[in-house]
Image (cartoon, rainbow, N blue to C red; front, top):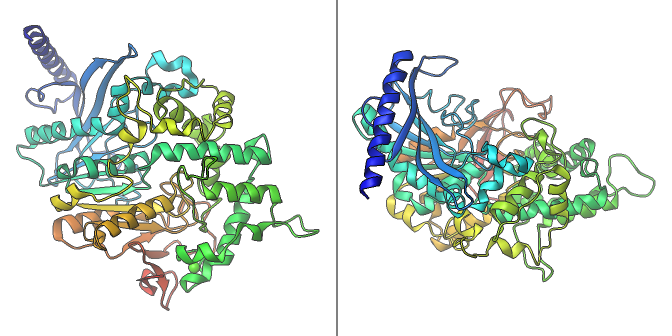
Amino acid sequence: MGHDRRRLLCALAASSVLSISAAAQAEECWKGPPPAGITITGSAWQEADKGLPRHCRVTANTASRTGSDGRTYSIAFEMRLPQEWNGRFLHQVNGGNDGVVVPALGDRADGWVSGGRVPLARGFAVLSSDSGHSGADPANKPRGLAAGAAFGLDPQARRDYGYSADMTLSPIAKAMIAAHYGRQPDYSYMAGCSNGGRHAMVAASRMAQSYDGFLVGNPGFNLPRAAIQHAWDVQAFHKIDPDIRKSITRDDGRLISSKIIEACDALDGVKDDLTSNLAACQKAFTFDSLICRSGANEACLSPAKVEALKKVFAGPRDSSGKALYADWPVDGGVGMGNWRAWKVESTVAPWNNYPIIATMGAASLGYIFSTPPVQVEGANDKLLDYLLAYNFDRDAPKIFARAEPFGESAMDFMAPPDVDDPKLTGLQKSGHRMLIYHGAADPVFSINDTIRWYEALDRNLAGKANAFTRLFAMPGVTHCGGGVGLDRMDALSALMDWVEKGKAPDAITASVNPANPDLPVSWSKERMRPLCPWPSYAKYEGGDPEKASSFTCARP
Ligand SMILES: [Ca+2]
């Protein structure tokens, strides 16, 4: 005990020395000692630049330890504390396998869900972390493309990635805000997309009292189950062509999208290349309509391609027919945006390391989501081989398995604890709010899974879920943006109005990203649409079809 205490004091003294020497070269912005257990590794004023305000950037870490795999772990994080503070705290939760301290801006740099201005620029104090492991750990380098998932060999690193790092950092960030500004934040938010959406949804279940509002994008709340889909997809597409990149070509992707639009476009009242009435579209389109009829070989697909697509969209099952993840809806964005990148071919940085991004899922599935871990070799062909050999009877149950030293299964540490029977008791009691958005053409996390989760929640709450949790489907939009849809909005302000003014979001106005190469040339760059709370959709009522005011949120 005494020894540990001396070590802590030494560490504090060392960090003070560091602070003083840092002050000599750059203008020091962190005053006073760090909260207990925190090592400040840097602190400097960042002058206003590129739309960001003058702010104090503090880099730090906590919970340093040696893992059961002999590697060194800590939870590394940064806080950006604007000089002109708006009194709010935003905990930014990040995507992929984490492992990197993404700059604490509060949103992607383009501010796609915060009105084009990142929360830091709007005056929020922002926290971002690596969730307890470093993807750049040199010891993992020999694992190649699987290096970023190798932390799955350590039980605590798994737990930190799943939920524990967020729980550790939340009070620390609030204490640092109080120390820096002299008072606690008036309001606290958590926001992220993809795995970040998962972080926020898990936090809404495990620590609802810690945040007034949760902004949840394309949530991978069933991430281990969704990773099984990668194996399912790869096996289906491999049957079309062993070079999966050629299985569904770019032209095929465009054809699938245009045929779905053709079948479903008018179901929302207007032909505008948007299939907003998602429920009706499922009945109006069949993949069989894509099959080449006798003699035709253009603007159609081979029976083998259609079989594979039907299999992929039905979702993975074991040999007894039990669903292992979810099915997928058809929507006008399918085949466009980042759909092919996730399913069959990735060409855009940073994912172009992988032939398809699904192979990143292979490393996660083996190292992080299987118990005991499967040490998948990190060359592209090895990752593919693992997915091709994945056995849905033998391997899929490993996401539910517990075996010492892994006391929690992947579903235990990755999913909200009440995932299969959601009640969100803590969130409901706290009076806090959750706003979820999800691209209808997301190829990674099926919006059907999110819809089913939301409908189960609503049933459990006798139709009152929308009092504190709302889900907004984004027609045509793929994984966290892109596709044939409107993927720019200010969901953050919608959530703030709900939390701070009690004004529930009955619709969120979305606009287009003018740089999106997949948008039809006929669309006005000024096009706007309401995004509607599920189960309603944007129905055309008449007037200028480029204007949001020509639509209402209607029940199917
Ligand atoms: Ca339409």
